[in-house]
Length: 200
Image (cartoon, rainbow, N blue to C red; front, side):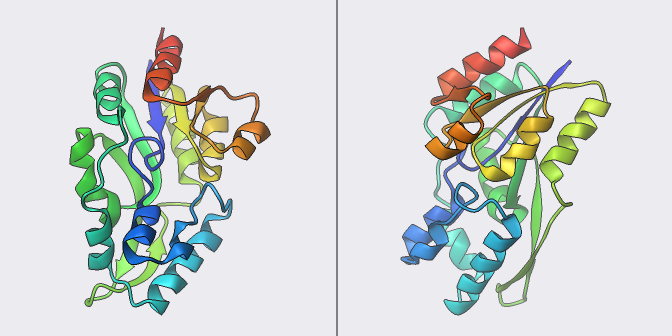
């Protein structure tokens, strides 16, 4: 039996931090896991920027609450949920993504958590566990699932490599070149075709 693991941002939804950067006018927040392979370095930098600019969780909610799924993502997700178990493995946080998941039909999602002060200040982040994407895939494989994975960034690579088969979705040219053995999908129609071939 097959199971599909997908990244969230950049695959089904726009990048949250880029939306925050555009809404707040803070260009440093545009940096994502497509740019920085060390997630802790990236998050520590983001927390410093939020603290410097006194940005709270409500301000981030304001910036991302109206985000819509990427074109074709809703139809793709609906099709996929009718074909195989779908698990979203994301390095975002429940406080960010939770309110948006209904727009995708509420697929199951595993992500991380934020430590928030009473005044809404983001104090720290808490990982579900280190390298959770890879470990989740390995756990599903131990249950005798054949895992198909798709993602777009450095933080997806261990998940993609642990899966039985994997697809890059709209990666940067450098990331695609560094992982030239993995097929690339540029649209949700192409991703659907790639997954459908593997489900056959």
